[in-house]
Length: 578
Image (cartoon, rainbow, N blue to C red; front, side, top):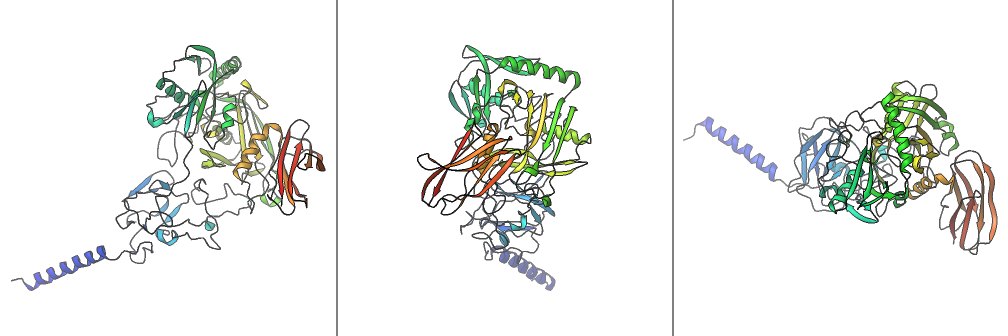
């Protein structure tokens, strides 16, 4: 017979067990706030099969990332779709549900209840009226939008809405596939199918390799003999023959030349050492012939001799920022106009993308590798500039980037120059001169400064540019196509941009981007090509976008053409009047 004390203890244990069983087996209200019943949770939510699905998802992994790249791995969602934890430390985190990582930072414990915001059909409202586009980069720590939307600062974290319920089943657009082109034959390239050892382990961290490494791996896979030779004085490899055929072999490449990418880049001549060009997902490389290898060798030898004598020194550096000529820069934006020239700038490595330690983003290089972005950091070290602001972009203008981009430059005696919207900084560095790179290489290098390995090139130039039409962060956005088209037209000196609106039943506005001063003439023509009127005929001294508001007011429905010329190049745009 149990004693009274034992009986009490037994009843107490029974009651405790019953309570635990009751909590565990109680009705779970999927999608409702967790904090009402589970105040002790530091994080809680429900994972569904899709943004607007009612079915829950079991087994979806949950990982939290801090700004330094360190992570917290939590249990996957259970059979009721529940994710929860009670031991997550206070702080800001990017949250990855399955393969989908958030692009805004979540403050815990303040935002611990996932089901508060991630609701069916999303939480769009009058105050929350913005959704991130599928390829929008992750926000900087602190969810500060101003590195990209400095002026007007119309984009704010508080305006962001969720697209729907919490789901790991959603996918962002897939990166275009990579390829290698040899003798006109295109070979799909997936690094998972190869065991690649880089030619330059002094440059690339473990697991990373160059575009040349990819080309050689494909050639080896498909039995294409390649005679490769290292030139010590040039610090690069040259190919003497392919399939037994001698020639002046070099390369073309694009970091995004897939079906929806920039295939035309595969025609550009290049002057960057190919075994120093980082392979990235979506990259293409094409083996070319007919390049001026003698000029490349001459310039490379001169550059390496300078490096061996004085280190990583760039003889001529120019920074030219001229935003006052661009729309979107009224006085209250506080943007500055500044031009600076420097001689014999010593550049040191700052290891922004070097191996070692945790990081949210890839670190492809060995420590001590010098890149084009290190030039700006070195000028900051030397007191010539007092701020270099960067932000990491996974994509830019809809194209794969996976790099840091310069968003602000500060000058001690002038102030801060900001990038914003479709206004920003671009650069060119290499051998030759800015107008004429060696080998006739294209000045639009499309190699981001933080992954462009340099030695001691002849020059570096950073300048301001505006891409796309002038409808600036309002209801008529620029659009990816316009930005890319402007960039491609830069060498021609101008571009007539897409008329807006289209089709139109009233007035149509025109705009054009001038990259070099000149005299321009814009005319309107009917379907037969007959000129109807001159819309603009004048010299333009200031570069940048100019507008012709309500320039076309044709009342007769039909197709019209607008023609712009500088006497050498011509642009034509179509207008449809309804």
